[in-house]
Amino acid sequence: MAIANTFAFSGIEAVPVEVQVQIAPGQPALALVGLPDKAVGEARERVRAAFAAMSLSLPLKRVLVNLKPADILKEGSHYDLPLALGLLAAMEVLPRDEIAGYAALGELSLDGSLNPVAGVLPAAIGASAQELGLICPAGQGGEAAWAGRIEVLAPRDLISLINHFRGTQVLTPPQLAGVAEGRPCPDMRDVKGMETARRALEIAAAGGHNLLLVGPPGAGKSMLAARLPGLLPDLDPGCALEVSMIHSVAGLLDGGRLVMRPPFREPHHSASQAALSGGGHRARPGEVSLAHRGVLFLDELPEFPRQALESLRQPMETGRTTVSRAAAHVTYPARFQLVAAMNPCRCGYLGDGGRECGRAPRCGEDYQNRVSGPVLDRIDLAVDVQPATAAELSHAPPGEPTAPIAARVAKARQIQAERFGADGPLCNAEADPHTIRLAPDAQKLLEQAMDKLRLSPRGFTRTMRVGRTIADLAGADVVGRVHIAEALAFRHRMPGR
View 1 (cartoon, rainbow, N blue to C red):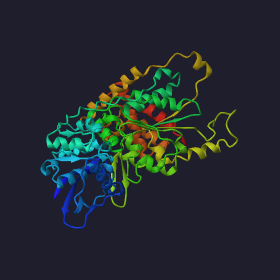
View 2: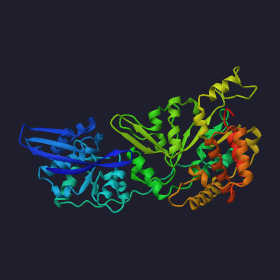
View 3: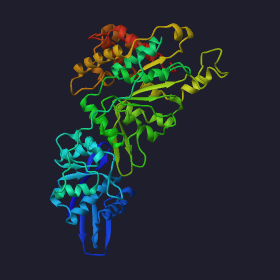
């Protein structure tokens, strides 16, 4: 029996799978067992065609391929290459002991060339943990090289790999793929006026807090949200690797380059629950996971399906999302910063006597009620965005540029990193409320506000965290009354209050 190694994926975890190949006397056939899905079952025909392109054929015997463990569903086309290697080892074309020292994944074309597949980065890390080498398509060798001290073979086709093992050709080790360039961000200097909204954006960036922008059409809500990524610092190496693994499993890791900038995801409001929280036929990561350690921007918030919005409640609280299936439960990281924008009502002009519709204010109540209270309760900052006047647009000086604001945000994040330590949370939005020191007058103000504003315990905690961020921006060790007052002012602007 010959063995080739590969992986199945449960979230971003690479689960080891053995491809066991046995050739025995009997009616010529190639049987594949071990819970393969349709894509894995079709690998038999791709392998036959690839062998034919190299003037090879399967033996006229019964060939049994078992994917161990047999109780885990095997999905995807990346099983093509390990299946081919297992067959070649069983046919004595390749040495069995050498093939057993590698994990492999890749999709075969009919001519034997290798096509890219999803999940190379977590597979490389899994192979490193098992002290195995990795064989992957040529275009993804740089991605696999991020796993560190691991032998990576990245052939363009199956014949190159065979020649390498036979010693007639040497595959050169791939170079690191490099770091992905972040998307260009517009500058904050283009935002004229809107001092309250600019301040809220800075606080949200400094503490990783959720933000809601409410205002009429054209007021600049989307414009402000598009500038938030430019204020955020680069990801630290651990977060960059975790984010890159999610994008690798989703097949979105561009050229195998590591993601160092916080992701910015902006799904359309027609997105389904599976698209947002994850799911589908193969339980792929959703937008909440693709935005891990970055920003999830939901424009026209009330227009999203109610069920999709409600699915955000758990990941907003726990930082992970679980896709449940009959056969398995798949968990993905989902520690994202929510930034949402909405109109005050369906027509968009609630409060503007000359433009609002005849159903005001009832239309505003109905429209805002499309976003449930539990979702709004998880939002830390809310801002009324009013459109700039003609005089402001024409004569107001440019706003403060992105660079000095980003420097203040980076300084506040550094203060938080020193406070929490290497094993603690990354920002104030995740902080344990018991670690936040409030001045006595600040504590009293917060307690009074909880009664008067009818804050929930969650709202109480989140206001403390926002106050801590405001204090960090001011360089204060203790959260004072003025910091809590500003945090409450943003909380009081929440729709429905």
